[in-house]
Image 1 (cartoon, protein in one colour):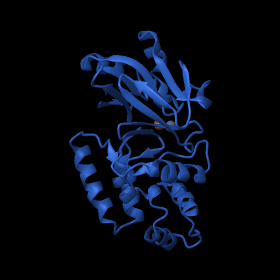
Image 2: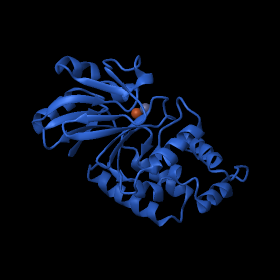
Image 3: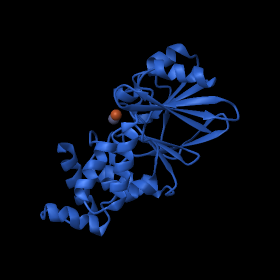
Length: 257
Ligand code: ZN
Ligand code: FE
């Protein structure tokens, strides 16, 4: 398998996922059609499917044009998003396994950012949309903090540490600045922030990361860590020590950061 990140709009990523045996491809979150069709051309692959992580326009905007350009294109999304994604052909849910050439794609339902949020898992690569970002997570548009916290740490968190995380936006640098402010003595965060700043200065991209790196540096993954909880309580003593309460507090702080 190979994965080609395709920068879209201001800071979105679509991803072209290619089965090397058959040269069949799928695209995750095509915010725009033009850049995707160009990548399909350059790679010399056959586009068979669209994998939508959720219904937001900055992720599905290119779908109608792709459907027009390519006959029989399968357009996947969570079944609750049936009427919210233009061009939708097939509803998926937790545990479904889809195929693309010889690749098997597993569907993981992770609500919180939206009710129909899904991650697609292919050969150790997780396409997380706006659920899990490099150093951060999506905003709570259609869910409670508890729901998103569960999706991040209990559902995605069950995947192996080596899982590669392909996220939906280039927010990593800003996210890590917030993380560094919360945990000034976390060396992993400082190292990662420095690397990310260098990468961005060179015009590079920070996707993918790994789940291990997110556990070590992403505050939204760290709310069960005692040291982290104490850091948050030092900043606001009214925050209770339950991980869900800590998550709720830092999600609010991040919204204003
Ligand atoms: Zn979104
Ligand atoms: Fe988005």
